[in-house]
Length: 120
Image (cartoon, rainbow, N blue to C red; front, side, top):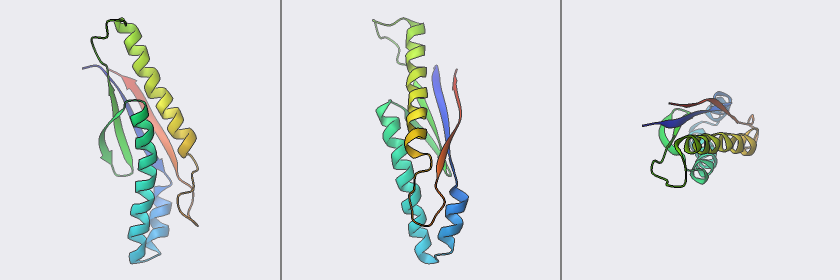
């Protein structure tokens, strides 16, 4: 199956983990809230562009856009280009919305790094 894959990694997670650790037991809840809020923002954009979250890897996620075969109005090359464009636009929107987003007071802002996008 040909797909487009994206690996998105949260940058600044170590800083927020350390800040939450200083809060004691309450820090666990703060950390869970923070990571969930950030991942929700990523998932919202992925759903908008048809990406499927394949796996969470710590503070990162692997996402896939499978090519849908059988659209009678598109040839194979146009279909590949459309799927790749969706993935790139999604990565751009995620970075635009979530880079330097303040999730929690007194904590370094988080950013997201898209490490790679490829078609196989």
